[in-house]
Image (tube, rainbow, N blue to C red):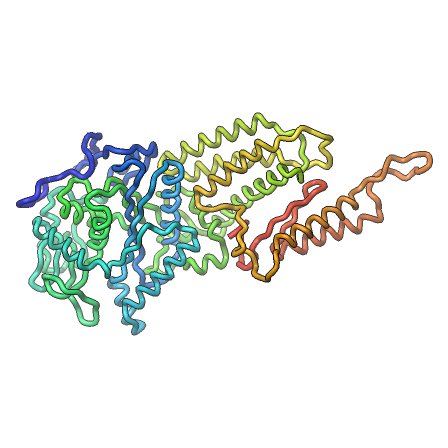
Length: 550
């Protein structure tokens, strides 16, 4: 029970749903809009129906970066994964995701970095904040509805702390620090880890209990500080998220996300603070946590503090944003993920397989690719099965590996039907089914956040002119030369006893066409011969290693 002299105990959300067992406060399934999706809720440690308080709207808060250094792939993995989840909810469940993210721009690490480089902590924070936002755009992560900085919300944080003190769940020391009083909330603490012995400096005699954690830190020399009822100081780490999330969403939050390393103590303390402030039994209905990213062969997560990270900018010199997104899709968002050249090659190969099918299907629909009669009815059936399988997988805790597997199976069977032949002898063609497959695959790729066939001017080398048009004309001319060289002689007659086959004097033209194709490939122009016709695509070769597109 909450200890408060004036406030009554209020329940966040609705209470008619079934309760989960546990000594740290029973989870209550909210009433409201059932998305028909299930999500693994860290509060109950199992999959739960994802029910939103407001119909068609998800309030979503996520912990942003502490901006004291370059963002790395560990950050990218978490943000891209949750970007994919939000896109799925938006596109497949018809949910408007209202996403707020905090930027931690005052912290011990930022202050330390500023002192080391003799630069104001505010300058350090702004510099790396802008770099982080730029990196997220490079990775095609949809920005939140709002970014909020801690330093611009200190007055809200002070008021938040004051209310927690009034409710009897925090105390100030003579020195000017403020601590959350964990014993005051009884057995409600420990939703993620169970019993806890201590937090922070176990030898801090100012604490009433070793588990208590700081809400406000008194000022120290050479540190930024703000006025408060307890003297000048600055916020503790955990209080910023509780305050800012409450300022945006009030006492009710649908979804809170972050890396699994934030579950304790950060998210645990957020819950304690927020429920003490709002005097509610359930502040956030769902906590979603993403798994760590590890360098292959290392048991440790990628992190700045361990100095074992690859920056996002360095990564994008070798691989594309789409390749990294596919890399994330191939593993469940809750699972740890190993980063290596081999795993990135798997992601690239998957993208290239899809790209090959899309280009081949497009060529077939245009009449540029001649094939034997396709098994049209079978392809329609497989398309319907794929749609069902993908939706079931994504509705089951956003199981992207299973969804991608279903997609790749459709692509495999589509590619099997697109085997070129020299002549089709007027065989019945089935462009409609391939059109349906291509449309569905493009739509699904768009849901996941990328499109293999987009060819924007910004992706092309800026040498002036219209490169795609030039390549189109070159490929057309080459195709006509190949068609001439591949012309067969007629069957022998008494007047012309020469055996049928290719004209020997034209073989040099075939070799020249092959040489042109091979010479253009390293330059990023890929020409594929499909029987008597050819198709082309342009790849960006500016990076060391690149996939099908940017």
